[in-house]
Length: 189
Image (cartoon, rainbow, N blue to C red; front, top):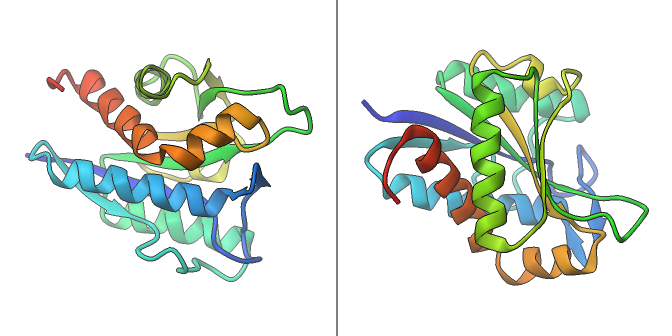
């Protein structure tokens, strides 16, 4: 039976739950593109079934930050997905800060180990710095999903080298997540 992966392309276009900006990029555009590429990779693999939170680049979920997050979690819980992946980009006032990381609810859990595989997949595929897996139990999408959930921070929009990678090669970020999934589940790439 196929493993059901729900891809949440973090943030909305426009003002309601909009994302970070930097390097001439908007987080919600990058997450939509990477999530769409990842969906295509998973659709082509019989080991997986996949759904996404945003079906078009202009789709807006919810009317506020909280209802946007609720809509994403509700879609995954109602399916029900086996795994929830929320795709994001990071930002920092210090442009030297860079790299890829993942956030999970608790250490030494299934999402924690999945996050390690995903971060390693992305960093190997894109050349970003491996910042590891971090805990953030306050994140709504990690607290309210009924399945293992990982929030992925692809790279920093505010770092020139990371922003260039995100702009020029979003496909490699999707491939990195896909290879991380394959590695985690023991499938060949």
